[in-house]
Image: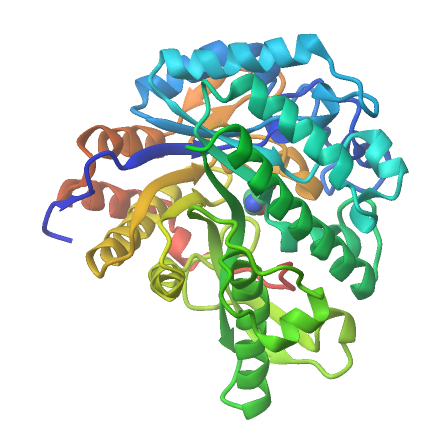
Length: 447
Ligand code: IFM
């Protein structure tokens, strides 16, 4: 890259997090109970104290400010605000007000997620999202929107509804550990209904709010040229990437998706599209896997692999962003990141994905901002603390923060609102030094 790539004025630059992954001290939700069961977390670690941001948020936000961030995605922990049905914890509400005010003091725009994988224990005991939780969820949404509408403009109702439904109810590797396609589809339908109602409620309380989902998109490439692999990949792209968006953007969702989700009312319930993008999968027709919708997904093999085994495939972000033009909505990249032990792949990862975002903007995709996953190393769900996605290293024994080289590189980009050729040279040097491009993994991919 030998030219300067300038981003639109007002482009949001920052990082994304989720409460249970960074706060620590979360003892009243389904994840704390899940972590307590032996064998559930691959490295045996726990979310508490973890990154300990419940206590350290002031120093953390000061650092993000120093690193040039102008936006920050975080989630509000439902189980803290509502420890029992209909009960509000005023201290938790006051704490989150202080958190949001702190971001504002640093001129960092908060992007607030209302559901990011965790449920209060009492919701889980009532059957989780297999049952309609709208009454409780909307009560929570109403309370927090009333409380913080003076501080928050961007709301994400639900993070990755399809991933949540799949990992917890079909694959069974997240709580509650169900392994049933029927259960997963019911959960997805309930989440989409909750999103639609939350969208209407937020707008009733705050007409100028910008509301969306954070939707996981993956490039799905047929593993071979066989017509069945090609058909399966195409169908999975329709179902996993587009059915949810089409339903919420009031376009016609694919017929099959309407049938499976019994996708309800056709109302436009997105003001922008929140995109979480990580990787590409190769898709193979798998006749004996009805629970996986007759497909096997494995990581792509062209690019370097992250510690997770996911292929790094920046070009895919361009392709997917271009495919979103059909919805005629602005886009916010709500997550994009890479897990690795050191920090050799991340600088190149950042640059290559930002170049893809810039290319998409140039061909007319209205991308409003980029939120890297993630700011601080944190608790990566079933993988535990081992899977480090942070721009800032956290020593989980002492809580010490150390800024990684990628964070300084990203800081320069955020401040200039542009990528420069020397950024690229620096990133390539780091990549070569780490030999990351030759890293290869294997195995099944969870989508
Ligand atoms: O850490 C998760 C996040 O909670 C949801 N999206 C994917 C990230 C990386 O796996």
